[in-house]
Image 1: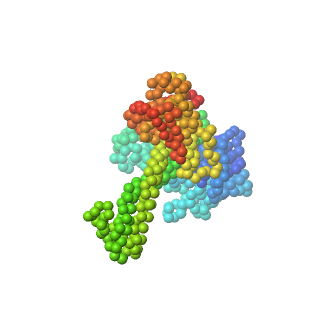
Image 2: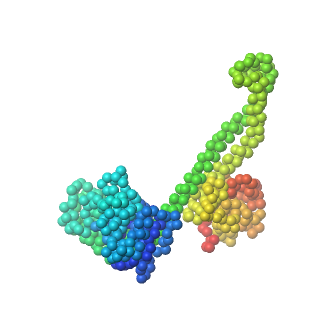
Image 3: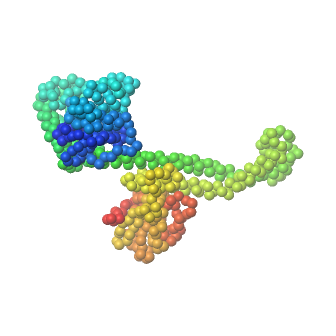
Length: 578
């Protein structure tokens, strides 16, 4: 998430105007890295969000936050104790860095002279939330930084607070055009590299915007700049700082690299879709909500993929083992004959022999080399071969069904992994999570109730007056077959995991237009793992010839009397309200 120094400057100025003098009503944490300071306010929102999350570090006003019932960290307890009935008296940015200091009076309810300070450092993975007393001693921090992690700057309770180093960078508002020119120490460097190494808060967006307003190419060498270039750059920096100081609204930008909010209209993002938002806090909250939802979606997708991959690895191993057992079972008759050969020549086997070459009773004139256990009698060795024969003979009758069951599970898991990859929202992933829990691939969540069959929804669209239904997950495909009428047309890609499709035929399947049938087949292909192929084989049959197989994974069916179409995958549009 983009929350750079210019954005922080605009938010801090707004907070100083709107929140100074507000009394703290309550303090709580929603996570280890985020605290909420609820303030009294004439107009909502009255919740100050302080986040040192590496991905979503920020400060802004919002509303609707509630404490996490399982969130209990030391920094939250210290904030609650020191800020009870405190008053926010100042909000200040440290120069042009991504560090903000909040000053509270009446700390611990000890009167207006009692002070407490909260420092929020918004610096990616180095972000932190630190509580200080009036003597600059650290009371608590969201992340403890001992000496083995940072020798220069330890962040631990009881130590004095040391600000982050400034690396000899300059505040962009403190330099004249001549002073900007004087900072050039490596003339061969590009303007972009010089800008980042020289000025505080030089995020990519801030840098690109300042250079765009000054009409200076970022890739140009610094030694090629003229005095007039530094004059224009100085004016552009002053313009940006002034615009952020008075910004109460913001702009949200939808760009290929991600969405973000910014306090000024950007000339450097002409290719991005920009929308004004009347309140800068609302703009930040909206962007964060979208990005956190997206991050949560990917986190849940990753978790489900890992959960589905584990049984997939096991089933691959099981198939390999059963194939090997199948090969061994084919030798059952050979093993029986070895036992019979031993019984036919007991007198020729010396005691303690490890191997014997005996006449083959099935091929006169031939001999058979048989491995023996020297600790057993010849009769016991024969019985050992007979016992092995019985085991292999029994396995021979069952191994085929075992192997088919393992292959069916592999087919199901293959489709499940594909569905997880293609899920477009949290709702689809949650439905798959319920299905995986039902199949035993995930522990069932005690707080979540699995959907009943009536709650499982299938998708639909209409084409030329015909309703086309389809499912994506195994449970949806089962529901689809349950809804099917005998004369409806059922479609599915041949020998490929994917969703099922159903055409409502009004009991007249022969009158379904070819265009509708082809569109449904193309949609079935688009729901399969072969969605990127140029041509996909799709089988279709009347629903009365499709049946669910007992004991198989969700969505697994057997069908007959099918025909096949070869189509290019293409999706159907869903009907409004479907």
